[in-house]
Image (cartoon, rainbow over all chains, first blue to last red; front, side, top):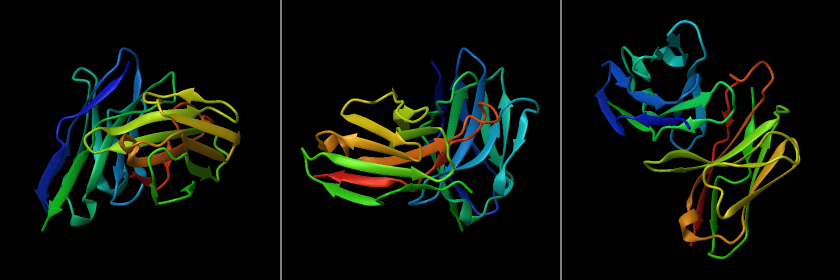
Length: 113
Length: 115
């Protein structure tokens, strides 16, 4: 069975600072990895996904994530944040043989002026 | 763009009632999913459906059932609502066409309160 752990439940940062949201996963088979964002009172939107190939994946709004197989991690980064990216972020994993997603607990990113 | 529509944004029901949550998608997707979202627990899969009239239990199916009579519609049913089913419910859909890496698309959620 697969599992996902998001290491920080809350990450407060100041505007224009860099940010990293951490995600570790566990699986005995090959996986796909995803980051979703949820703005207040909305559903989830896909930020980026890792399927295969280059371990550095770029997504929307300047976010990127790096897949590290040896550390089973998929951390999300942004070099400079704006207040508008305040939201909850979810890391998710699916086995390459299936379509089910397993989600982490979520990380609330709050950008302060 | 994929549109997943959940019939209610907010719903208040009483303990013991039978509750229906409806979800409709407009992209002819085969797969549909129901999750509940609780603070600190992320999203947990209740039921999913690979295609019309097909359904499979997710991780927390107890107290719930589903119906998929038409491809575009996936209903979640709380047979006898209880207070511990107060939660945010999210519906999602995806197509397996093009490979297993197709993402799920989400509705805006239904915030259900059971009194």
